[in-house]
Image 1 (cartoon, rainbow, N blue to C red):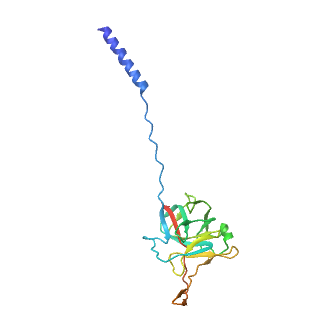
Image 2: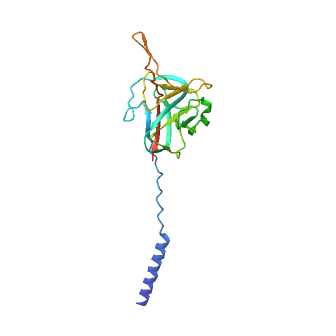
Image 3: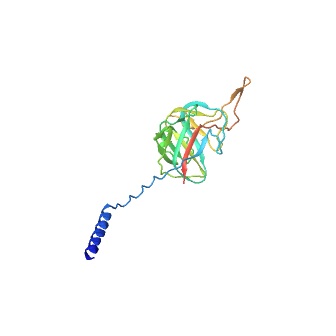
Length: 209
C-alpha cells in the first residue's frame, strides 16, 4: 500500500510540473488604431444639405481665394481643394487659411494679418493641414493660394452665398473680390446685378470633435 501511495504521489507531482512547464500566457490583443472620420464642412458645387448648386462653371488661370463659413463646432484634420472644370480635385502651390479678408499681394500671405496656418502638403488633389490643428466653427475663414493655377469658378451667379471668391492674375497686384460678369442674351449684353460676387468651386473637409 505504501508503495502504491508513494508512486501515485510521484506521478501526480510529475504531471503538475509538466503542465506548468507547457502553459503559456495568452498574448494581449492588439488595440486597433483610432479612426478619424472626415466630413464635408462646405462645398460648391455640391448636392445635399450644405448647398445645391446647378450653375455652370468657368475655367480660369489665376491666384485663387475663397471665404468659407464653417458651422458651429470644433474641427481638425482640415483638407481643402479647388475643382477643375471637369470637377476633378486640384491643388497647386501653398494654401493659407486666415481669419479675415486679405486684399494684399500673393507674396504677402505668409505674414498676412489673421494667418492661422499654411500648408504645401498635397494628397490626391487636396491640401492637407496639420491634423491636430483645431479650427473653431460658427465663423468664416479665408483660403488663399500663393501660386497661379487652373480652377473653376461660377460666372454670373453667386453659387455659394456664405462666401466670396477672390483672384488676382499678376503677382504684383492684390487679390480682389470676383465680381459677377454680364452675359449676352438674345444678342444684347446684360450686365450682372451690382454688388454680386461669384465663387470658386471648392471643397473643405474636416473632422468634427
